[in-house]
Length: 96
Image (cartoon, rainbow, N blue to C red; front, side, top):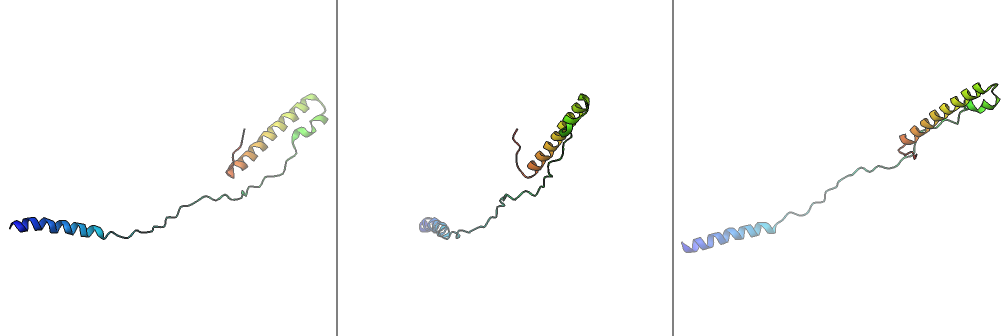
């Protein structure tokens, strides 16, 4: 009986050691990661328009000159905003 009490746990421990020796082989797992690739921008910019203030010098009086200059400034601001929108839509940044 004493031999069984001493030999029993020895056999159990031997079984635990034997199961550890047969570890599974390492697996190779393929993981696909999407990467952004820069592409050409397809935004077309219209040619430079004719602004209202280009003829301000030939206006008959000062009031029409000022009105032409004011309209020219508004047109240039609108054109600048359109160009900035085209740049940012392509992923660029506008430096100020």
